[in-house]
Length: 97
Image 1 (tube, one colour):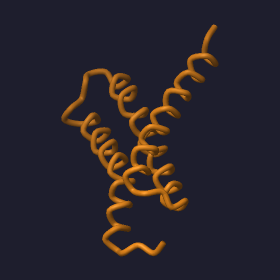
Image 2: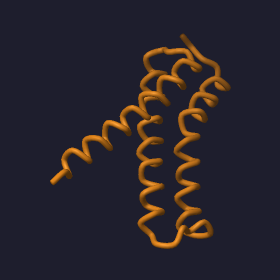
Image 3: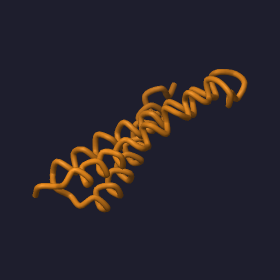
Image 4: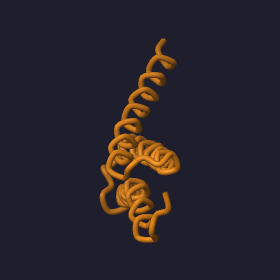
């Protein structure tokens, strides 16, 4: 189904908004919102960046497959969060001693 330019821009904005927000937060954590030692900033910023990159990829995938915009956003957010939890669990299991 052919979409108009406004619908394309809306889909791209919804797909890229979490990435833009997490990059902004990472930049703020490096400067004015510094939490002290650098490791706390990294532990907050990296998972958000990973989550937003997975969300972007899944949003584009669902768009390519023709899923409606509302359902695609919900599915991308849910699957991105699930993927982040699975990555974290895998990291915990593999680093277990």
